[in-house]
Image (cartoon, rainbow, N blue to C red; front, side, top):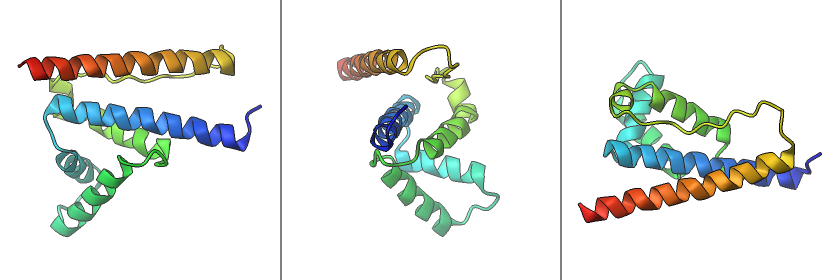
Length: 133
């Protein structure tokens, strides 16, 4: 059984991964975080109030800077992003781990650690390719 501290640390780690994924999507689409925030806002709301969009954009960008942002909020953003036509046209694959309850906490933690390492290496390779262009 996990302690409160372990649960909090696990959520922060999950948030960091989700934040990295959102930022990777921004890079792949060639969008700023503010542009992505505007797209998300318009998907969530029926109005296009400039003041409200600006406020949401500011909040969104701040959430991407904090590992304490709730993973559920970030997952909601990723869900919205993955349904955007631009995302689907870009043929981007979204990483998503779905625990099925068959693995122990230790094994899940180790697999997540390996996955993070691979994500970082892939991200570094993508940045290196962009520099070569």
